[in-house]
Image (cartoon, rainbow, N blue to C red; front, side):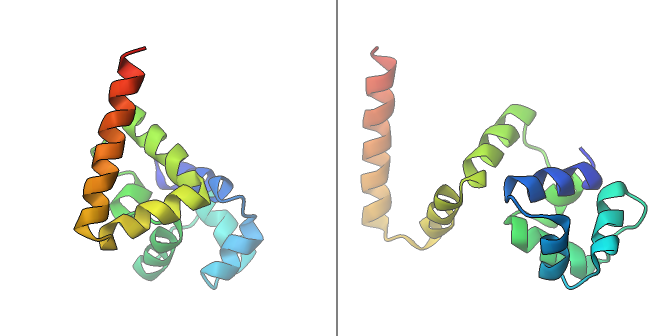
Length: 116
């Protein structure tokens, strides 16, 4: 998937208009629209801002990533939910005991699900 399609999809996942996205990255709405149409390319600073807003890497934003489409779609659906996205971002700073408890909970959940 290319940059244009990613910009449209990710913006819509966040339920933002082109105008709102343009304001977040300090460009005119027409400029942002041109990014989505592929008639103009953002510079590296703008790509960095966009990646930060979407909470992905620049490589992922421009379509240079190695995850499978199914994994990518599943994860994108997961992070489209603002509460789950925030929870996921906080995992990196969670205490090890909390992460161990989460793993036990997850393992129990999967075992119960698989036993049905």
